[in-house]
Length: 270
Image (tube, rainbow, N blue to C red; front, side, top):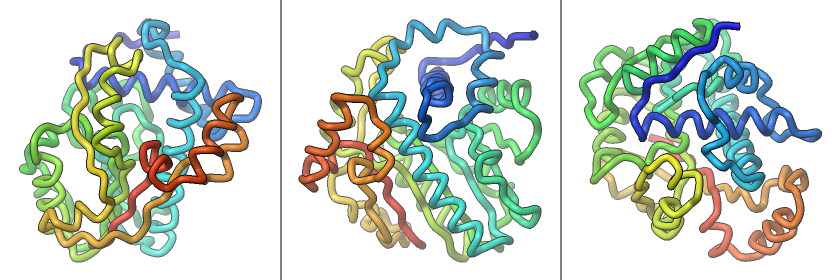
C-alpha cells in the first residue's frame, strides 16, 4: 500500500491528531462516530501517531463533538438542499462523506494550501478544494454568494490569532444572503488549559483563545444570532464513554458552568 508522508507545519499537524482520534474511535467496540473512512485514511499516512499520546478521553470527546456538528450540517442541508457548505480548516476530515449531501449542494473544503494538497492526494474528490490562509478573506470571492450557506468550523477558533476569526466571520456572513455558523466553542479557561494538554504539547502548539458567553459572537458585527448552545456532557452518547470518564461527565452535566468548560456546540444564524 502506498503511504503518504505529510509535510506540515505545527498548526497544520493538528489535523493528524483529530484524524487519529476518529480512527481510534472507529476501532472501538461501540464507536460514537464510527468513521471507518478516517481509519482507512490514517492507515495511508506515513506518520508516527504514537507520539501524539492520544488518551481515550480525547478520542470519545472528539468523536462526539464531530458527530454533533455533522447533525447540524445534515439538518441545514435537508432544509436547504441547494445551499453552499463551507468546512473551514477541514484538514483530512471526511465530513462530506459522512453527511453525503445531495447533488444540488456545493461543498467547499477549505484549509492551508499544503493541507489541501495532502487532502487531494489522500481522499477521492467529493468537494471543491480551496487552499487558503484563513486569516485572510480574499479566497471568499471564489465561493458563490447568492445561496444560503452552512459554515462549520471544528477546532479552528483557538488556533487563530487576534481577531482574525471574527474578521473572517464578518467577511463570510457578508457574502451570503443567509445561513448558519456552527463551531465547537472553547471558554477562555478551556483554551488556556489546552496548551498544557499532553497531545498539544507533543505537537509544540501554543493554543490560545476562547470566549465564555455564547452570546459574545453577536457582538462581532457579523449579524450573528445565537440559536443553540449544546453541551456535550448532556449528550446521550456519553453513555458510550469509558469509565471513569462516563461518571465524571455525568457529574459535570449537572452544572451548566462545568458543562460549559467541556466541549460545546454553538449554532448561530445570520
